[in-house]
Image (tube, rainbow, N blue to C red; front, top):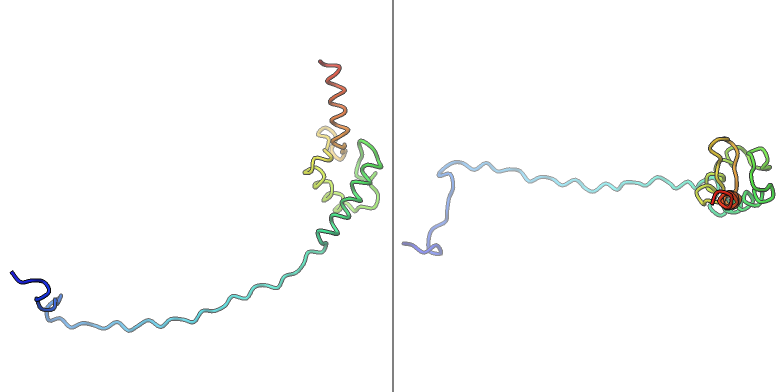
Length: 119
């Protein structure tokens, strides 16, 4: 029995012609250009300053208010700042009266008062 190291080279397929496959040409890497950055119309700092003005306006009006009571804000500005204030749980919109908002502190005071009468 011959030792593998001493045996001749292995050939597969007998005497068949071997067709050579041409090497594949690699395509150079094409760099993707990033679109130019366009900053938003209002910076975060400007929005924050405007939001503080919104909160101060809400505080000056009182506990509950409608959109037309907050002066100096367009409908779009009011909606944006009201949405942020709702997420921050500073104001809440009344479910039975669309367009009427109350501060969360006022709402909690009402709940405390009502609990005194129901407990």
